[in-house]
Length: 65
Image 1: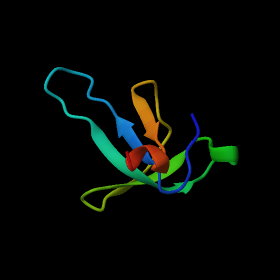
Image 2: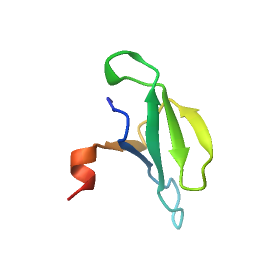
Image 3: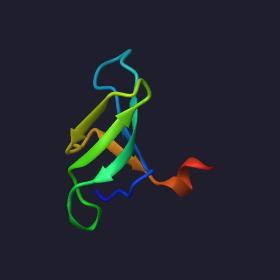
Image 4: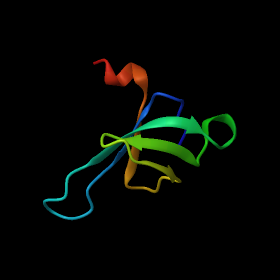
């Protein structure tokens, strides 16, 4: 999984009724776009994440479609 600053990180809900959680990558802390990432959620909260198999990166180009 590789991401760049400005990409979205989508963590899919794990149980029925749980919504996807979307955050914006504000810093790539690994080498060559690899995790961990500093992300910012819609409410302004920031966290450091190393995404698992339930996550997807939406690159900036994909967001515009």
